[in-house]
Length: 268
Image 1: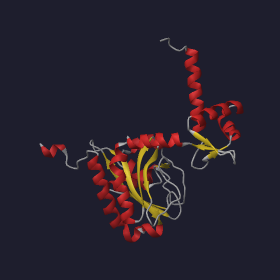
Image 2: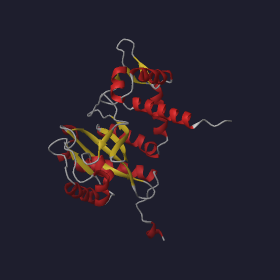
Image 3: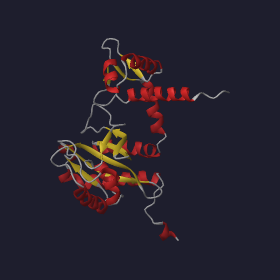
Image 4: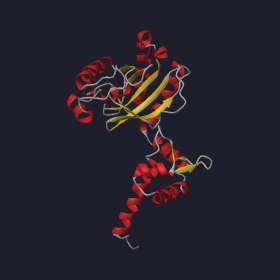
C-alpha cells in the first residue's frame, strides 16, 4: 500500500487541527456559535470554516439549529465523552458512592482529577438542597480556590506547587487565597485533618468540603467533595459530620483503587 506524501500528511494534520480548534470554541459560557463567530475566533476564512463545520456536522460532532442559525456540540461528542469516562478507574470506583453521598446529605457530590494546573470534574450529582441546572462533568476549576483543588495539591511539596501554579494567584472573591505562603499554610491543615474546606473562595454564597482519593501507590489521584449553598452546607454546625461522611466514602473509593492505609513495612 503506497504511503501518503509529506504534503498530504501535513495538509491532513492541518485540517484536523483546524477542526479541533473549532470544537474547542464551544464552551460552557458560549455553547452555541455562528459561522461568523467561529471564523473570527479561529482566524480562518469563513468559507474554510463553513467547509469544516459541514464535515463536523455530517459526522455528528456539531448540530445546526435551522431557526436560529446557531451550531452546538452534537451527539458524537457526548458519545466519546461517555467512552472516556467509562474507561476512567476513578470514575468507575467513585460514581455510585458519590451518588449515594448526594442522596444521603442532600448536597452536591463531585469527583475531580487534576489535569495540569486545573481540576477536571469526572462526576457530579445534585442533592435536593443544592440543585443545579447544568452538569459540572467536563468543566475545570482552579486548584488554589477550591476545596477539591486543595485536596488534589495536598501530597505535593511547596516547590512542586510553585512550579505547577506559581506563587501568586487570581482572586475570585475577597476570601480567595492569593499567594503560595497562605496556600502552603492551608495545605498543612488539610494534611493534618484529612480534608479541605472552601467558603466563598470561588463564588459568593457557596461552600465545599473535600477529601483526597489515593491509588495503590498512595498517591493522591482525585478528590471527592460535597458542596452547595452556605445555608445547606452549614459548615459552622455540620463540618465534623460532613467530614466524617466524605472521608468515609473517600476511603471506600481509595480502597477500590487499590490503596491500603497500612504501610507495606508493617506487614513484613
